[in-house]
Length: 145
Image (cartoon, rainbow, N blue to C red):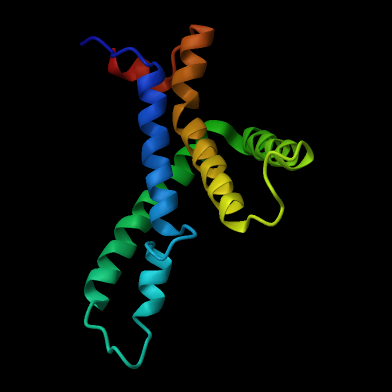
């Protein structure tokens, strides 16, 4: 069985899924899970959507656990610290060179969401990229052969 080539499309699709998960959980617009769930506590509307809210929350929790566990296993503590350090440095440079205004909290939130999704995508892709760059097979690839 031929193993498909891992490239930019693979990394891009992992980033899109990570960005979707991050932004569906919370974003600076009113269209996110956190705001939707908190709206259910409104005593005036007496929402009947709790089963749907709980179902979506469990599905998102499963997605978060999958992404976080895979990222932690793939990057390790040092890799995660390096990725967070790189993300903070990007934010620092954006502010230092006045590419982003400090008063723009909405833009800052979107940038942080983007960087967090990039860290998750890096964690999801790292084992494949390391194998491709180094030529060494991972345990999963050896088991398949």
